Amino acid sequence: MAELKTKLTNASVDKFLKGVKDEQTRADCYQIIEMMNKATKAEPKMWGTSIIGFGNIHLKYESGRELDWFPIGFSPRKQNITLYLTGGLEQKELLDKLGKYSTGKGCLYIKKLSDVDIKVLNKLITTSVKNMLNKNNP
Image 1 (spheres, rainbow, N blue to C red):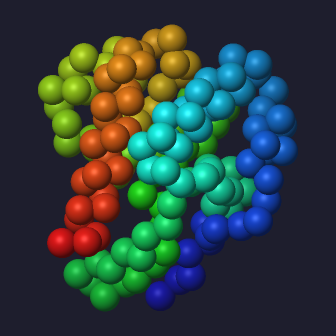
Image 2: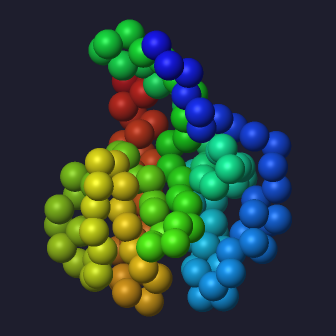
């Protein structure tokens, strides 16, 4: 089985974010850090070279695969800000109220925070964290 490339590192989150060229994206990232920090009570850490994760959980899949991952995180990408909300994207009633976004498997994509309702995003983040922690601590 291939080894996971994205692992917890000692790289500086602040240094990484200072490298984000777009000022609005950078400001949005700092606001997302506040929301995710509040939801997890965990400090932001770099995972790989471009993902900011909060917390650390050990996942075990039915296939037998095991890995260390974060309950919630995000990454400023060129096209959008990718939020890793694996435990929150099944919340259709919240997503219906969110605003402009798209989704992928476990990911929520937004262009900028002003495109979404911040209160709804906060609720999605909180729900995602609770669902991930409950799923891994039955």
